[in-house]
Every structure is written in structure tokens, then in C-alpha cells.
Length: 443
Image (cartoon, rainbow, N blue to C red; front, side, top):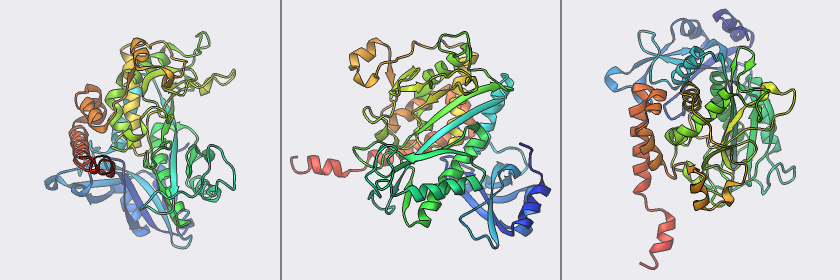
């Protein structure tokens, strides 16, 4: 796709009667931040960026060094379809820069750009990712009252959210996000809209767009959409299974026709890297205390650090190969959840896989049996470890990880660890309703 120029943007603004342009970026935790400029300010913004106070953004600068610049990326220009067409509103995703116009090390988008540059130096032009984000619709943001009692792939009338999904897909396509399919998920009122795979940076931009669109369309219909990983006790949580592959030019380097499983040595080493470093990067792809309510056996969320050619109970699944579909050869990392920051998560997985390739990690044997049916002793004998079972445990592992320091960089790493420690402490000292009901009457 040809890169858009400043003149392209100015022309689109004029032709579509765009009056306001929202500039988007994310904080360290992945929350979308935004401020609006008018069309009259746009040309200056495209040339020089727009200044803002970075000290008020989670994980950014201290107050004495707070001046930052939001530099809009012309390739991310899109008109917001849920806003009026007269005096329309568009958005552009920004790179965050220092006052001297150098990349800001605290910008999550820059973290992913650094990871992609490492891949490029190793000969990989494309890191393709295809995340599958699940979410719930509730009647309001104050409780988990569901809209339907549907299950996996259910059709109306059980699935009353078909119109919601329809409007969401149409809005995404208008914003340049390609959608493959949408459907009801396993839990009541749980849904999924799958985007077609893209290069990682464009896909990370699409993920934050997706989350905003899902919420905006839900609000338009008077309901609430949430990407909370585990909002309902006893039901499946929401994941973000992420398919990924590396390409050199137009060649999928994960494919090898002569290999028994059609996976190249590069793919095996990449998978080995993901397995080896999964515990270390867990606090990035599962970054909330609630994430670990989802990462428990029995609800389709993979907690066992193993890989398989088909088995969905393993952390990494390799989808079945079909003749003539060499370009689709990939691995699927199944532990991420949609509350993560996609820029940091894609960067973490890529660095882990590249470490595996660079250092020649050997992949263990695939586990094709249902890992949930094995006893703890059986898993131990097979050398199958588990992911951390709490944010506190995960952040301790991350804090001691050289890989995570490399992924996040000197600026974000200590801030991320500090933020997550505080979140864990805030959670740890609370007295939940469960403890009151269990202990208060008997102790």
C-alpha cells in the first residue's frame, strides 16, 4: 500500500467535510488517549506535530520534563463513522516524540517499532499477526447482566447481538480494518469479530481501533461492551489468541515442505523461544489481576507451557496444514487477553521468538493429548510447566527477566514493573465478598 502524503490527507479532509481530527496514542497500559484539533491546525500538525503534557499520561514523563509531541501518522487517517457526516470527525494515530523530534522511549508504538527493526536486521521483512479478540456485551457497566443465553456460533434468536456485530463490522470496514468473520462465542453474551492478519504495527493500530469501535457501537445501542478478561464467574473468559508468522519478502519462513510437520527449523526455534520466555512476558500479555481468573484449567484458557499441532489445551497451537496453503503456515499463541497493550504484547512475543531463532533453541516434542486430563505428576514427568497463577507472581518473573528489559527498554521497564506492583498490592489488601461469606460466619 502506497504511503499517504500530507497533501493526500488535506485533500481527504476537504472532500469529506472533516472539521475535527482526533489524535490518538496509548499510555503504557494500552489505554487510548486522545485530543482533538480542527482542520485549520492539521497542516501544522502534519509538519511539526502537536505538543502535550506527558506528565499526566500513565507511565510517561515526570512533571519537570513533561513536554511531548504527538506526531500523526498519515497512514492511519480514518473518518469516524459513528460521528455526523456534516463537519465530520476523523482520527489519526500518533507517534510520540521528544521535543527534539527524536522517538520517545516511553511510547508503546516505538517499543513495537524497535522489535520490528530487530526482525528486519535478522532478515525478516514482515511479522504478520492475526489476533482474535473476544468481548462481552452487558446491559450496563455496573453489573454483568447479559443480553443473551447463547453459546458458540449460536444464531438468532439466542444471539440478540447480531445487529450490534453487524454495525461493528461495517464501522471497522469503513475505517480500513479488514474483517474475516464474526460470531457468538462460548459464554452467554460473549462475541468475537476476527480481523484479517496484517503486519504487526498496522495490526496493533487496528486492535486499539477495534476496541474503540466495539465500545462506541455498543454505546450507540444503549449497552456496554467490555474487554475484561473474566467478568463472569463459572463462564469462559475473553482471550486474544494471536496467530503469527515471519516472512522474508514473499516467502513464509515458517514453512518447510520437507519437514514432517511442514514447519521449518526457523519456526521450531521461534516456537521454542515463545515457550521458553512465556513466563517472563506473561505480565505483558496478561497484565491485569483479573487476567489470572481466566488463566485457570478447565475454561479453554491455556496455562500449560507446551505446543501442539492441533491441541487447543496447549499454550501454542499450530493450525493444520492444507496443501497449497503454504503462506498460511503459522503458530497461534493462546494465552493473551484483550486487556493487554497490543504494541507491547506483539513486541514481547516477537522478541521471544527471535531469541529462539538467534540462539537456536530446540523445541520440545509436541503434546497432542489433552493436557487438562493429565495429573500434576504426569505433567511434571513430561516437563510441562505452567504460567504464573497471579499478577504478583508474573511481575516477579518479569522483573528478573533480561528479555523483558530488552522488550520494554530502560524507560518503560521500571515504570511498568512499578505500576503492576502497585496494582497487585491494591488487589492483595482488599477483602472480597468471597472471604466475607466464607469466613465471617464461622471465624
